[in-house]
Length: 296
Image 1 (cartoon, helix red, strand yellow):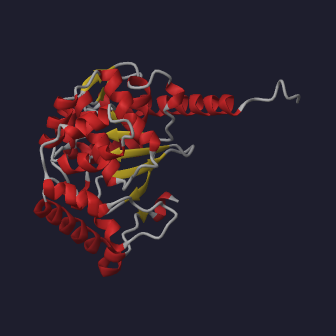
Image 2 (spheres, rainbow, N blue to C red):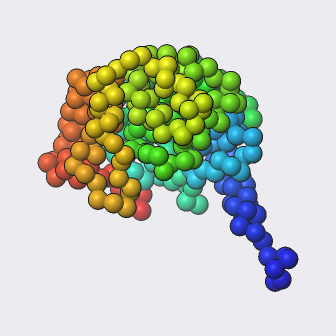
């Protein structure tokens, strides 16, 4: 193969992104069709939603799996549908609000039955579904996508929950692309973060915007004054990279950024109780997710 005909890295990237989109669309169509037949609402979150609704060029927002949200009360029926379609439960993390399913060909579905673990923050999955917008493009059957301000608030909470920092440029770009595409207003976005219990999460996540005129920076500037929250954000600092040893306090990262410290402490206690019920004291100190033997 000559230098002139050798594929460029960009062409490989585009091919990979296209292939993932096609596989994801196939699986979303299967799941959406089955749930629609049962009258169960289904919302598409994060990667696939952002790629279609926020980015001008879909190849600028790759994703690897499907993030789906269902109502908490619907979870048993939804899981019955997934098993009937041939998906297997792979990971169920105690105290969390998502379960990872895998298809026979290895594609992963991250099934959420709420947005944040243990009652963390006030933005709830059922309310987000109730405000969701109908979509008939992403799948062969109707699905829901987030109302844009709900979607922005969820991205902020996800940034905190995942202990992300200034190096997570893809996630930071999501804030800006969604704001541009949906014409979000900083004042409204800030008020929505406060209503969802995400004021301190916003203080943390939105501080990494390098451009003071960015949507993230302007939204942060419109959050109500919170001296205690600012102190907590400074105390947290920048999280360690995944390959670095984690500090003992890193496990409390998201709980410290709940809408107030007592609420964060209660959410953390619920998380610890869930871990202890699942695997005793050892589980509390090593809160790894549970790999089900029957899913191997």
